[in-house]
Length: 321
Ligand code: ATP
Ligand code: FE2
Image (cartoon, rainbow, N blue to C red; front, side, top):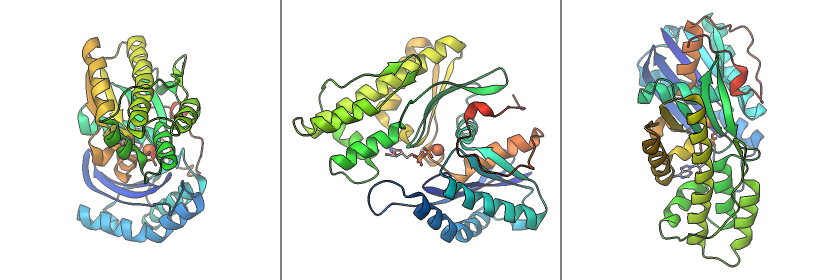
């Protein structure tokens, strides 16, 4: 069975095509703001302009015709409404034209399912770290439950914001990682509240310290502090659920220091770390195609194709585990 999945929650317009558990195509184009953060309407305009080209390229890459597609999936949330609406509209159009089901798919569950498929993880605690999202997720009793999450911003946005203040170019994460290699430790606030984390105080403090401290030291300390908070909450989720696998995904999963810190924690606990390959760690159409097809095969309903900007990971009943 062939599924065409459309991702359009934020910067990325992506189309993935999967045949059962084989990825045939994963094509995307990313909107880059001229300056500052993402402008939702400009991002939506980008998605609208590029949609036809990306769908066509994905079909060419997969070496299939549009008529070969059995089900269409799209990211229905969480995300920026103007962007979500473009993906939903393209998906509805294709499904109507082909007279096939149109599966609304949760973006975060997409990250988990493509992560499991690509790494072979079976039942992991997932650390999902991207620009807009930071969550520790694990499956229990019929749903992917959020065990801990950011109370304010996503870790990637924190890195990008700090980098902007320091005069570094977007995206800030990779630049901070490079500068951190020559940095040394400065104390920054460490904020874990129960199982949740909060970054806004750390970000404010780090920006203030730009006036007095070396940039390399701040990059190093920002990484060490924020990542340690994520390791602490992931470790507690592992202990609570008795699981033995950790899945690292999202754009920030590209960070080697985060991977190393998680790996140390996993080894100490006798758990195994699975890191999603870079191509599939950031937002992409394949994550939606994979998760949408699994939901479709499990008999999930596909009539309601409204978007839901706040659609939470733990709102979704998982019929296939
Ligand atoms: P989402 O919609 O899930 O929130 P997103 O739109 O932020 O995702 P992603 O591609 O998942 O997109 O993640 C982008 C983020 O990843 C950016 O904030 C970027 O700075 C960060 N990032 C990329 N590489 C690194 C790195 N090496 N170290 C730290 N952060 C990184
Ligand atoms: Fe994402």
